[in-house]
Amino acid sequence: MKRLFVDTAGWMACADESDPAHRPAVAVRDAWIEGGGSFVTSDYVADETLTLLKIRLGIEAAETWWQQVDHSPRVCWEHVTPSRADKARALFFRYRDKGFSFTDCTSFVLMRELKLREALTTDHHFVQAGFGIKP
Image 1 (cartoon, helix red, strand yellow):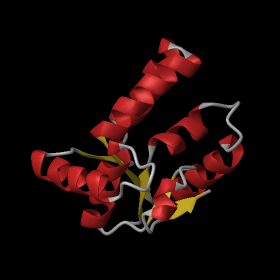
Image 2: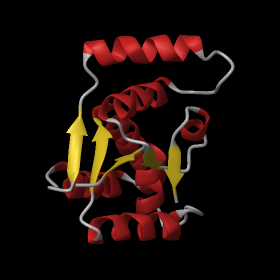
Image 3: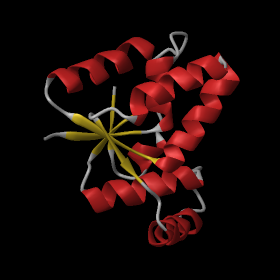
């Protein structure tokens, strides 16, 4: 089964109709599902996404998003274990010239570990880290 990592920016683009990337992100998401693919995300990405949804769209939107993804058979949840967090910290401090957030670094560690090459995101940091992005 094809797997695509979904970053906070990807979840937000799909959820927020006012996001400039909304339509293309939804198109990628829907085509991925129609093609039998699944999504990979992390507990750290969920933390960011829930917070941003609450701030931008309200608590109801955050709750709706959570209900949709929490038990979805199409979403695989990866947890940032202490070992993964250690690796992410090493990346965070190694790339001082980049604007990577710590959550970005945890995503990069997960993607490398899981051999995922692309993410649904509008965050250019993924490209800087060597990954492809959709849309």
